[in-house]
Image 1 (cartoon, rainbow, N blue to C red):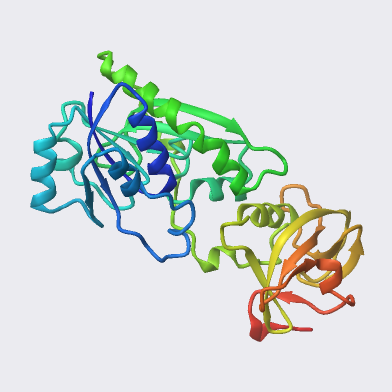
Image 2 (spheres, rainbow, N blue to C red):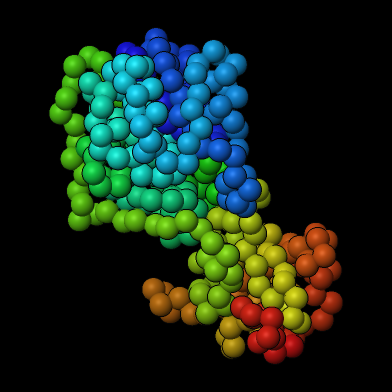
Length: 320
């Protein structure tokens, strides 16, 4: 099939590579300009560079809504558009232009985790599996019929980085498998159960600030979700920002005021966390590695030279 691709960053790069390695013909690539936003610079393999290396014409757009783009798309005469990690709305006259419409590839198990940063949100929320979905695009965001979907398990120590590598390897089989079904003439696909749908927004600084009222189990997942190269989960100690790079849930139960620097346990320093409403248990979060405001990385047992004081969610609320 003749394909036009809309994509950005490593997800788009992997999709384009899969298309170039397939029997399908890539006629045109549309991608976003480079961004300096913290999250946009992560996994930032260039779709434009890969296309140009293979002699595929490239258009750079923030939004696909201008007349020149529409004319170029008509000239490309695509059988289908394939989109992956396209960051802005694609209007109906664009996604409906090809003979077979537009296939969107999304890094979640739709209908759950439509929207942005699905792997991070899924890990924070304690999901047992994540995956990749190829679905037909329609007027509603990430809501079209599912053509192909594959899942991988979330391990007990997996970070968001681990989940990225697990799911990015699913892009080629999901995308090329879905195109194979469409090329073979299949037109009826799996409707999404909208009663199970969930939508999540882009990650921001407030989403990675630690709230010590959360249960330790939830905070430990937040730390794993904000693994390198993502911005690290952070708190404040004595008025200065402190990033938490690694942690485990404490073996013992430590009650008291959330945020209290309480006890050394093994290789970690236990911080009192909130009670878990599901179990009624109150474990601490044993921090094992931190990064200071001046960029030093060190074991938590070296950073916290004495017990007592508090970690807080704002520098002006430090109780130490």
